[in-house]
Image (cartoon, rainbow, N blue to C red; front, side, top):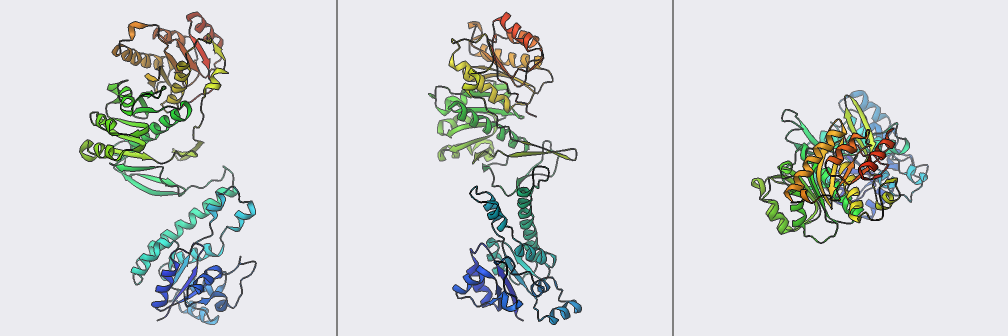
Length: 517
């Protein structure tokens, strides 16, 4: 029994092999426009769809396949006598296979040189309609929407069980296509989002929170490669914060940085301002800031992981690491950690776009936090007790602290000394507790490094939001703080300023709050 195939594709990759197979296995091929011309050039035996429908293409090819003889052949049921009679009455045929992919709308909108008219021309009508018709009648019509499916079809042509899979892929294909069109036409009040399964996780935040998985949004590529191990939910949150922190430090301060993360907040951060240290030294300085809190951490590093770094990393109890590059021999060393289960991730790119969070049946959206603080801004900000004698590294410490707090659970405070974030107080309901928690950690580090008895040192405190009361300054003074960087904006800013003057603490108002939740 002769089978009938309709081919109308924009992406012509792999079409020659498929068409040759269809010719050899007795299919009659019908085709349109550019696809027809291409297959004819390749020597494929086929029929122009216009000859079958007895209707020419019109409107510059905008109307080619929208015809009862085509859609009757797709939607008609062969076991329905009435449908068979209807198709016979117009000299129609049943189609067994449709091969179609759509105009490149998404690629077109991503090219800034294209005009609105260029984009509108790439909204596919006929192909989209063909796909929906085939999906509706998938038990009798196979629908291929991607060249990646051609080999499978050739190998399993007689297996109609694959039709459901093809239909799943097809409806997913046009869903994403429609979402792209919707998001181009509409503003943020009418947005569409699609999710593709990427990776299963053992569980979510807790062992009983199953199933758990990672999905990719709106057809994006994974922003990282999982080289080794199987990262869990918390691992992925820590990896995201860690790599963003160290990359931002590198971009803003021009120096390599390492961060040790636990439960969505850093345990220690170190930035090598002078760029004179090896990766190994940067790792050791980071892990030595708060060894107790770094136990079982996730590490982010802005440079290349080399062999000495890898050998030192083997000595630490740690869950995983994320970086932009690895020496291959270093990778072999790290892969042996945790009986071969140590998580190793390589970041490909930082994705900055709208963020979505589902909470209690509603979805909250916001842009990624891309706010930065640079030296020029600090020098032009409102200042208290700041003069030309302030060392450059203090200003850099203010920026390092600001970046650290962007990736730390609020409310949060950090103490910074010459590239070392030596104390972090995170996730507290009041700022005084943050200052005290971070201050105790800072004192521990100073004591372990024989610096506590060498005061005063240029210790900087950075706050993620304004200081609401003068007691914040008083508590900072108890922990030997010499400089403060905070957004300002409290109704008691004048009291805060007076307290800083009284205690001889230099302060800069950054004007930027960086809450993280």
